[in-house]
Image (cartoon, rainbow, N blue to C red):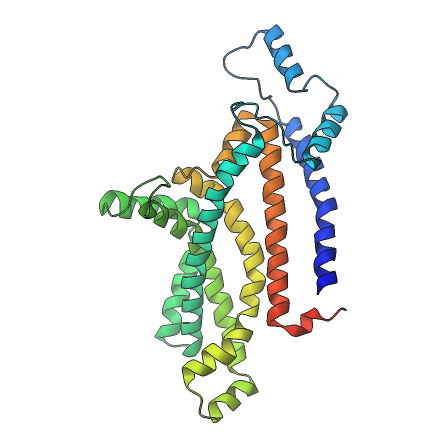
Length: 306
């Protein structure tokens, strides 16, 4: 298990280099530049700005200079927000995105697992059809549609919750529900299918024959095996929750890294784009690694080398 984890961590290095290289050259192929705007900049001032940010150097030289600095943890200055470096902006915005992702994941797990387990206990009855219909609704409605609908109902019609912000607890409810609802639906369907399979196994029938209560059979025996597909899904799901927060952060004006990335892309802020992409890439790979480790803990067979 230790060698497996070390091999996965070692694979981070070439993947991060490939992502950084691809992103570096791709953003420079896009039309426009960081100092292009509706208001014309004098040519002399533009040359000074490009020299200050090393944009007057050949492209290959810019690449190697950036990579050398990034290895040392220096992501450079922001072109559009020079009051702070890119690292400082990420340190300021990333905790907000992580908090939103954590709340959304909690919503997805609470709703999804509850619906899936309830549906699996009485298949092909109303207690099965009702939560699965809700799951299908969550899958079909994207968050850029669900978010405005929740705002319309709970903020404007009922006036129960605020429209935007991130300072108070009630401001975090609608973004978390919007972001987590689709993944709650997937978790519900996954947990239902896996629980139905586990509940038909011989060891479950043996546990029931011994006189164990239904709650004990489900929670102590069936749930551990039934959770394996859900745990497999959690790595990509947690990664998607972070990247999917771009839209939700813009809808609810959440000051997270996702909205910072969107603003940087619109402004051609090269260093901010590079920094956020690298941070997101590292987070996604780390979350997938954690999911694999959790799977190995649930199923000891996965710990054995191939």
